[in-house]
Amino acid sequence: MNNTVKTVLGLFIFAIINTIYIRYFNIMGITPNINAIVVVLIGLNMGMAKGAYYGLYLGLLIDMIVGSSLGLNALIYMYIGYVSGALAKRMYNESILISTIAIIIADIFYNLVIYCTHYLPKDYEFIKYCIRVLLPEAIYTLGLFLCIYYLMVLIRKQINQGL
Amino acid sequence: MQVYTNKKSHKGKYIVVGTIILIITIAITSEKANFATNITSYITTPVYRLFNGINSLIGGSFNYIARIGTLETDNEKLLKENEKLKYDNFILNEFKEENKELRNLLEMSEKDTYPVVTGAGVIGVDPSSYSKIFIIDKGKNNGVTENMVVINYQGLVGKVIQVNDISSKVMAITDEESAVSCMLQRSKEPVILKGANLQDNGDVCKLDYITTDTDIIEGEDIITSNISDIYPEGIPVGKVIKIQTDSSTLVRQVYVKPNVNYRRINNVLLIKNK
Image 1: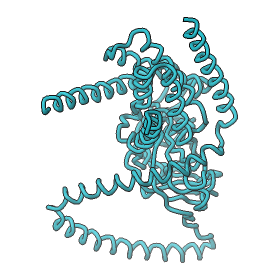
Image 2: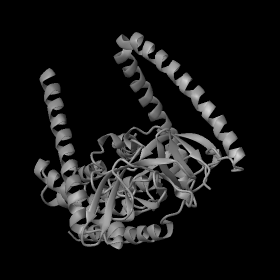
Image 3: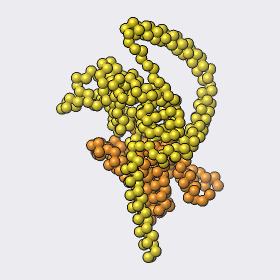
Image 4: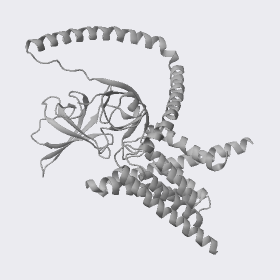
């Protein structure tokens, strides 16, 4: 099985697992944007083109499984993947700081697009949206990413010590 | 260098073309079921069933092991509860018969029970914070249609917004796009209940246009009203948890906590809409 097939299958399984278990991460109506974490990491590690393609694919999957319109998530995640790839080309050196900043920007970008498409037409106050959704979700997503990152580092260390 | 520049410009072109195609797709497919979604459901629904099956098997086994020590006392408790429920059921049947007789005396038509179409399992939820849409494992092939009412043993869950052949999408009443015609249980005053997931503490609803002269108290039950086009009358919806009065406009912000616990929702019933 080549890498592309593996990634496509992996993202398919991820999309399904994410929609099954995400409700257990719901805190006061806010859920972390795990899709953004995955797309940013793909963009940073695989480059602009793959970042954009896999972002588009994961977004389309989410749109088809649970979305109310086809293409919105696909569009947002395609850009996130593309920009993450562009960022990697210039400054990423497997640095946790760059990943962290990219994930925060990606999550804020996602929620800004959602604000413009869903809440701006309904005159929902922007400041209120920032306090209620944008900032808490960015912090939650980042916190989850850092937890997963340090857990992986710990596991890697344990495995290396065992060897 | 020349080759690299050409490659870069091609990537840019793909992104622009992709963007235009997607914007057109969003415009065309917005708010309606489509062919692609239906086809995808044929692939995703069996995978969902598989994962949910594994999930309940593992969860069930852990639960069984964790409760093995308390099984005897639990059994005793359940037997006592069963006896009490049997007695309650007997009393309720008596009331039912009495109610029937009184209705006959008053020449009132009998109230219909909710016509259940099918039961369904919740197999997935929208991962975003803003939308409260979830997927159930029953679709057109099981008699599900759009706008069908979704309930569980706790009360009103939401309504079906999109139907595929073997799965459907349900919008919860806490979704910001949701609006349900309800009434206050004590005064029977009609109210509009809207999803307010992004307000207060999340997973709540709010009542629109409640003035200071409306007779409403904290803890009051909200049920579906008889003037709704979709929802049958009398389904329990939630409880009033907070009332805030704006002194300048004399309009009150009333927050309602739904009876349904959306984090733990696994099975639902679909009933015919009006």
